[in-house]
Length: 111
Length: 231
Image: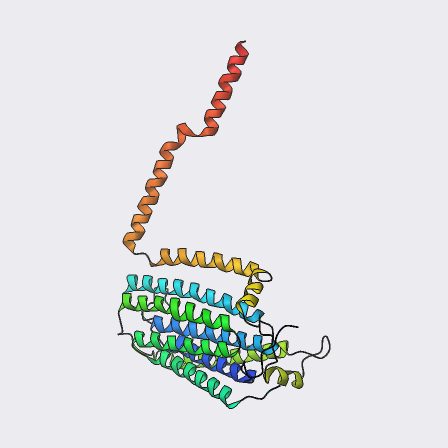
């Protein structure tokens, strides 16, 4: 039989609390994406949203006692790194072409 | 099952307040450097929460990849752009944007509820999880092995069951590297790369006619059979 942790070693907070924290983090990230116009802050809002999803994954993984959810979180972290690299490259390209990082001024495609 | 202790509640509350507070700080700053720094704080708080959920490997990854690599990338871009004259908030279409925030929040909550219903252990096959199962899932988490969330356990999952997504991620990272380089190069670098490609192409065109192996082999064959015919 594998050794079990002694009681008190791990958190015994109800999963609901973690899900509520994840929800709050997601809402803050969404507000950052939709309300702010600085492209850098918008990218940071996307990072917050991804992290909220990660937190939900880890909380559910702990709640059902199966750590596959943590493997998925690992993938999402790698994905977020790729997303940040390409997103920031697009930002630098946008600045080179338009001399602005304000999303309201970047209207090449009449958005 | 042991109840929540005061110390555990205190740790959770501290980390949660730190995470949310710094996240709000992040999206309200006009100075991008302050925003990046508070985002680093958010990620540190999240790493603590992962550790308290027995996800120790992920806590370290969060610190190394997010707080380390991604945030350094952000700082570099802030340095390159060096502009803070962007209006903090846009009032153009603020109503529809706010509705968008509420709608997205509602969608997130809705999906979470669906997931809660789906992963709650139902009593019999095909039976929808009832409120006791949901309460059990949302309540205190179960006892787990000491290997839960360890490098060994996560690594085993990565290289057995999830080996295909793992390889797909490596391809994705390669594409991101190439894409990042192509998108962010300047017009001058782009022209240079294009002229080099044109020159290479012209050189290949010049070399082609006389030195293709297939053609010379065919000629040798033809000469041989011609000689044989003479005998």
